[in-house]
Length: 230
Image (cartoon, rainbow, N blue to C red; front, side, top):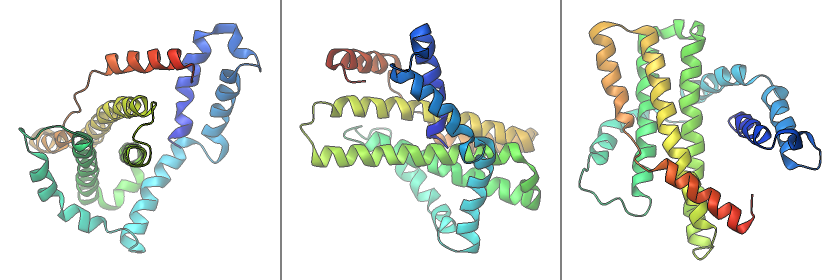
């Protein structure tokens, strides 16, 4: 579902090369066509987003396959570990801390909406989709982080490793902003006044991932042009 949303990337590429984007000889054409189909092939993404959160809750509370209550209990300790203003941001510690914040935000928001709305949550499709969007960002960000860690272990001298890491940084930077927006949208949908302020302050625990996204994008593009690997 998340990967099929890359249609926007293909749309931009299609626009950049104009009429050549319609030629079957160009990979942009097949990518744009396939990405459009994937958004509806196994059900529309909007429906899948609603099902994703429901399936997670089913596995957690009905089938007991996932220990979400146990993870929720760890949040205070995780927040304490995150608050280290003078900790050096070496290796992937900054990225791990940011990912932990995203997970904590998802768990907190899920607990708040569950206790606040209870059975009514099933009728709040927009809030469910907000939660599913945060869930998707958690999944993709952690998958990318694990991939970078594995590549560093197996191929430490890979010349393309630095580019992959920069792409991951760009994704995580954008993911944090998406998670914050989804959190605020959900909270504003069911709370007001002081209650809203309290929930918003909790949602701010997602923090920020401070990187120069503009420079990273330019460096990635420059490396792709130089190596001619797209």
